[in-house]
Image 1: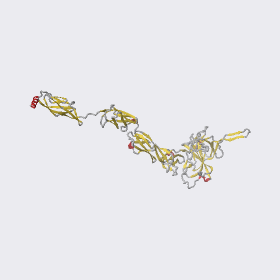
Image 2: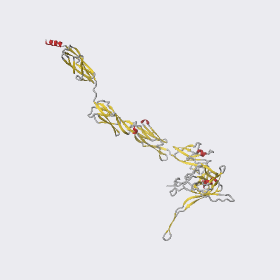
Image 3: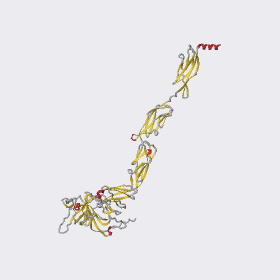
Image 4: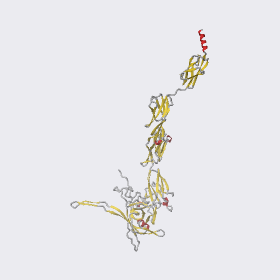
Length: 618
């Protein structure tokens, strides 16, 4: 296996120092916004940096004959780095920045003109120190002209770069005033655990040649840099040395305000929107430019005065978005842009009961190889919402009146990629069942029967008509139920009949009484014979026949009989004429269930009857 080729190292010599910068820190070793936040000077003679060593333990053991049996020494440790700076120019701001317990002296115009030293020193308040030595040799860090385009705003200016990220002041050395130039030496020592991270200053360049703060954070001993020491530990950094091509800041007497950019970078697909909260403070009264670097090879841009700017990238990736003020104060924020290549909805197929819910999840497959839960970010929709299925944030809701067996396609769309799931509606899950009415009657042979309704109580107290989907049964074979309609073929031995509806393990009953059908109404009554002759003192038998439903029934015994002659009586159709009847026609009426029939009976007197008999004898 061939090892990857290494980029050539840059080897140079350092000569003197061009600038130093002192930056105010808080008690956690972090740079802070402050009206006197930093100072840059070239008025120094020398800077001496050296380690304070904790020697390793000596492990020696002699054998019985006096010779060395074990002779080892533990590794030395660097407790801190000491720094001593000899100044040839007195800058009260720098001196008080390096010694926060010293008091700044100002004149009537508010200018810093001196300092006062008290008794107390601090081991908590400190500063960061960076230095720019001159470089010589090895091409002095210059790139080939064909590789990097010249930038008039940030020209190539090779320098060394030293950083002590957290320095605690120590007691000053003695100062001698004599016939000559006076110098002042200020000292300090480094402290571990700095929260400098990548720092608030543009000191180097990114891969595209644009200004950047440190590319790798200063290690605080807690893994902030992500870089392990050779022994596998997160060894806190005391000192950083590098070679850079970004010009050091210009020297200036006195402190200057430090305003660190504060911004958010919000990604939507491949588009990033940067909003700078303190854009006006960065620009200052002179409306200095504020730069935005996108880390994709595109030119940096000037931040609009409103503090918001948008950029669209060509492809997914992780980009180091940076905002920088004119004095090189800078802040960086990594932005991961990952484009969805597909969206999957799970479960892809599911059954949901009417009045029920189901949680779906949407997962996007991303271009950088990861997957992302986009359930909350996706746009959800239903292809055919008319069937009672709706979705909100991945939660599918089926209406109580949705039709079991129907299906719906639920879609989740994220970054123009869509995944879907198929929802099949099943019957609602019942919590109770009731049949109405609970009592009723049905007539044998009636095809319309008695209609019962089965109502299920489902989640949330909603009532659902399940008459057509419930199972119906009775305890009598003569009685049947179809979709709630009860019919009877005969009156069963057990009456009333219990009708049972069953739905999802719930049952409800009704008591139904089976009755014989009512006889058809009488349509007419006929008396036979319609005419008859009877002699006085004799009787004649008439019959009454009722017609109902096309059938004729003898109702002679049940009919109510009457005659138009009070002397002529009729009992069960038997007409009795008294002997003294003078003769004539009598109307006999038979009434049955509201219908009447009549017959005419002619009565002959008794004398005529005798004459008629004598004649027959002759």
